[in-house]
Length: 446
Image 1 (cartoon, rainbow, N blue to C red):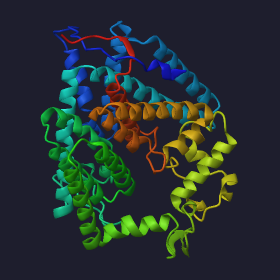
Image 2: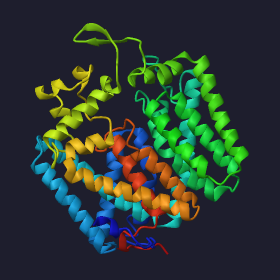
Image 3: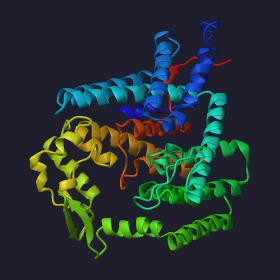
Image 4: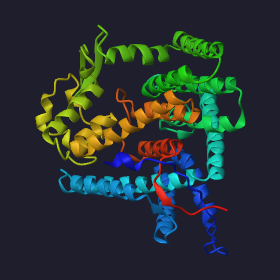
């Protein structure tokens, strides 16, 4: 039902507001608050939340003033989403956890709409991608400096607790690989306006992939590699340049795997072990005891235990789910001690580390099926558009869809502060690139 909403062109521009001109330039505040979001992601959750709330307040103000009007069909979709979350909260196994999470989703939904409105202005959009591109490069070089000399520009040292873990400007949070993997495709729109030299595009991708590899965040690297491979296959560059990029990346990975023992252990040994392809014993602690056992299949790993537990929770709450953000509570229940995993004692976490298992278990089919239908629609629509006519924006869309919504990967929580914001940024950019209609009226910038 909701998929019909997304038809025709977005076709809106932002308009000068002249509201309280002697007190505050609302246009300027709106623009820079949104541009600053990728910076506040680095600063921390508090700064990010304050930033998003300010953006939301401005958007709601414009909405109440009648400066913005939604497409009629989109209003139906918003109402449906509202009803789904109300039902999920009412039937949740923990009303407090689900209610708090739902307020977070509301915050992100409003930000998504505000960001989509922002992207409708070509000048704002151009400034956003330009500044984001230089921020991505800054974070990248900060990480490379940390790898090379042991500490970054802010004095943050890398960790050797589990390999050579890099954090860059994130300090003691080892998420810089995830940060770059989720944003590096958004550096390409700036390159589109800056140069027609396709070699620069490929060198940029080589730099990004090499840096993400060095962070030793396996999921971030593997999913980025998949998205980049798809991009290279369809990207309109000479074959020899594509081959050069592929061979260069293979060479970089090979060199570091050979001369950096921690990289080899992280990417090869640990991956093979967790997938159940290794005959070596897995050593770990359980209740202060040292255990040694084989991981016969992926389900015997820690992530496998999370997935199995999430599926069992879904089986007990098929239609409405257990309630948003309740995995952390329900996974402790005694009845889930019988999952077929050697890591059953480590089945619990704040979330099951997979987007689809998370929504399936916590939202049930009522939330899972509409979510999947929207993603399927976006995937097939973009693939169809790419096959009909080459458009690098559509190619970027598919790259983003792979990174964020490819089902076979470990992910952060959709409902968390750090991870959640990336999903909404990506969705807004995808919808803007597809020229899908959300607003029937919007304020314009002269």
